[in-house]
Length: 186
Length: 251
Image 1 (cartoon, rainbow over the protein chains, first blue to last red):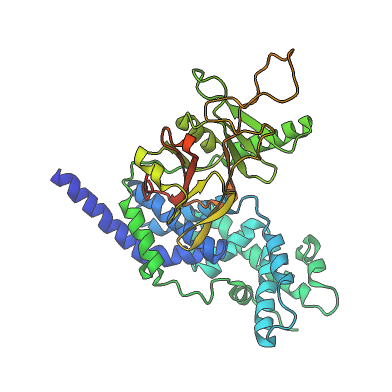
Image 2 (cartoon, each protein chain N blue to C red):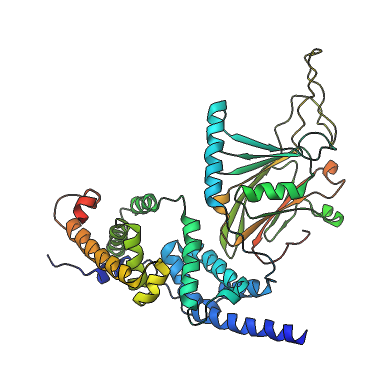
């Protein structure tokens, strides 16, 4: 019994350290993948799975495991949703008489998010893992489920496509939504 | 025109750029989540929603509904054969919600399995006798409803709306008097001497849950009224609780 108690204490100490070190990162990752409200649930579910499967969490690679689990939780959460539609709704929801500076920031952010949304999902994920989560290529590749070499190519292509899409939309006349097309990205 | 780098665009697009989360584990929600998790006994396996199977079944349901000219597809599960007839029927609606119509409060384990097949993390229990006194009360995450109330509620967990639950009594039957539990409704006024089929059982209550509002960290609890309490008007007790936090009060 004492041995079992020691094991439970040891597990809780280990989980406590994981939680303190990585909860914020996983929460931020979830905010980027869903929204601030849903993100708390995603983080809770991710760490609940970690707690229940503590023996299977690979030591020294915990962060990659947590990101992968959170990614799966987010994918389940978002399945069936149409993110582009939500973006359109958010764009349309901007009040016309909003503070100009604030409105500019919001429009810039939504514009950049729309550029990102225009990329293929794997390209988008590669950019997010490296630029937002600041993961090294090997860890990011593990989370994305591909080799480091494949990930490196994917990341390079994603950066190129994102910049091309941005340049295309900043030309003077045509409206943004008509320029973010496959032709503009090729 | 100068080009922006991918890093600059990504920084601009970052929805969490201004969100301070580094000490999020120590705020009230972070600590509450931690306490709930470590209180879990780890004996319950993590439930993975059968998304693909659910989608296929939903598509099948829509196809059945279309072929029948109905709005919804009905998946009726018979209750105990000893009682004759179904105790409840699970219906998948066209908006993705799931409705359970109760004609009796029996076979909670079967209903639990059916709800889980429908993609809901749900536990179904018959409440203990002392819980019959708690009708029409509101507690945290626990919503009880009187038969006279048609009510829609959003449970809240961690400050987040987690479930849209609707419990409503059925429309008054054509018959002037309401049948009691266990009795068939009274015969229709028009004589039908040649019809050998029994009258349809009276629906006591119905529960509609929207799975899309139930996040991955939450579990729906459905409590059948204690034995004898249904005839006194007690319907269902519904709770939405954090997965792994244990059974809510009275479950």
